[in-house]
Amino acid sequence: MSHGIGESEHHESPAGTRWIWVVFWILLGITTVEVALGIIKPSFLMGNVMGTSALNVLFILLTLVKAYYIVAFFMHLKFERKNMIWTISLPALILIPYLTFIILTEGGYLNAIMQ
Image 1 (cartoon, one colour):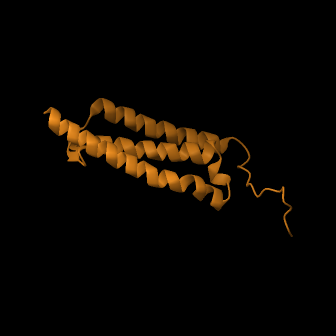
Image 2 (image 1 turned 90 degrees about the vertical axis):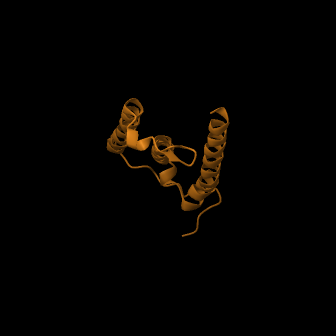
Image 3 (image 1 turned 90 degrees about the horizontal axis):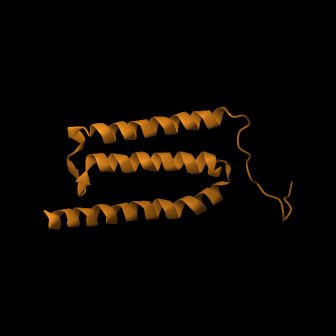
């Protein structure tokens, strides 16, 4: 079967609201862990990693996981064609680690100067 010029191969998101609640609880759990770690600040996570504490690296990773869930489910990217997913994701997958590296490197440099 051939597709017409104006037809789209957009994949529909799942029916119902159960998936919204699952994603909500996942995001709430990650946020709870982040807030608890921010309040407690465990000493074993305060070691120096890439110019910052391991706790900051953990916050960055948890925030990236939350960003994935928000983009994938609430912006419906998970239900798009693979080409569309790669078109949007690949620049972010390259840019986010690059900017994170720059921020951590420069933050470590400023920390060394100010001490």
